[in-house]
Structure formats: C-alpha cells, structure tokens
Length: 151
Image (cartoon, rainbow, N blue to C red; front, side, top):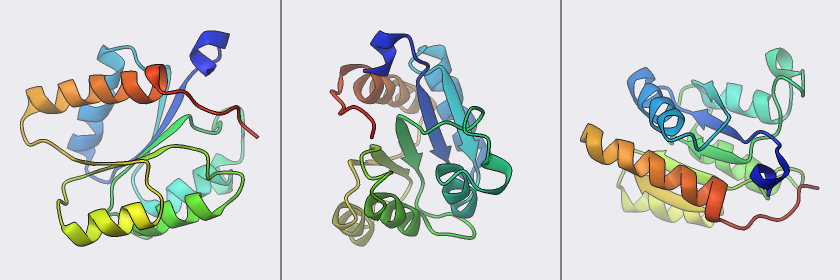
C-alpha cells in the first residue's frame, strides 16, 4: 500500500460543481486521508489527466491516482463514459472508481456497476453528513482497503 511505503496518495476528483468539489477537498484534507487531490471539472479533462495528455502530460505533476471520485453529470464527456474508458483500459482498470453523484436513479446505478464501478454513493444533502462521508470514504479506500500493486 502506498501509504505504508511513504509514497504520497493521490485522488482524482472529477466534479463540475465547485461547491461540491470544495466540500470533498476540505473534508478529505481535514481528515488527512490524502496527500494530494487533483480536481478536474469535466470528463474530457479527467481522461486527459488519466492518459497524461495536453495540460496533464507531466507524470510527476499529474501522477496515476490511487482513487477516482467521479460525478456522473459532467460537461464534455459524461461520467459513465469516463468510467467505461477507465475500466476498459488495461493500464487504468485497477484504479478504484467511486461514483459520487447526486443521482439516485436506478438506471445510473445499474449502468455504473455494469461498467465496473467499485462503489456508488449518492451525495448527502447536509454538510455534516457529507463531511463524515468524505472521512469514511477516504479512510476506507486509501487506508483500509487492500490494493494490488500497480502495473
């Protein structure tokens, strides 16, 4: 696990709502569950980041994330398409992807799991619950969850 070897932990947060992104970032930083959160606001930038294209070419500044937090309703490239791309790309498919969205539509949940999401979480509406969720989510995926070594 990265945190035991002293390597920094990285989360790619794909969220177009700035207020939600700030809550996620603040919640995780307050709980010290991630060394670095990389935030992008649309699906196209998420794919550019993951494939180190364009503004994200520098692999040192934009390393492979240990976890992707992915909203579904995104501009440019939809979150389900980002998920599908991640999980069908051999070099990316081991990265855990947690859908973190306001949609509780059964069709979104089913499609997310068909595309191999690791988890699906509907964003809580109140700040206190949202903050606790970020703490628990960070500890689970970055601390407690056993992960395979990267390729």
